[in-house]
Length: 270
Image (cartoon, helix red, strand yellow):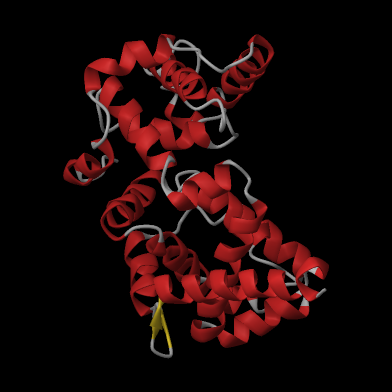
């Protein structure tokens, strides 16, 4: 269930390990009410984190470590605070790293543009990611794309939970760790490529479903999903639209939206 340890070194750049206790104690900028609300949510979420493993729940060997890391992060980044789903990411890191290193990796990981946009619920940025995702969705799975469109089924319905937890809640843990290995190497593009791989894997089934059943299916994926089948489907996904790669398409979406905002602005029209 462990990830390739070498990939986590990339997440550990930026903060000295011996600052962990200092960061945990530094509560600057966090109101008592906000801190207590976050700690209550953390307590509730920990009990639901990989419950089948029985290691993160109260009395388990990693309960206090997980609580400590999540509590420290809410103090370190009060502008983000604790968001439901973070516990799964921290738990995977705890299984692969020592406590201080796990915190550093957790903080660095959540500071990446994609994760920061989702955990801060930056609707504008999230819509840009969804729009870019749909470009490659239509390019790779046109039939399923049109099927989803016919039901007005948008990416936010299924992608948010996948991105929030980096698939650690949606996929079997050993498979999620394989996704993490490639994500740490290739970056955010692979998260969306994995999403398209899942859709490709279950395309025939999804084409037979209506809105409600699709949403239910993608919210709780089959537990018998295998690494070989999923990664075969991921490999078949082409992350290039015409001559543009993911980063170029994302940049184009950003530019188009900015220009659209300018054109729709009454102040600029006058």
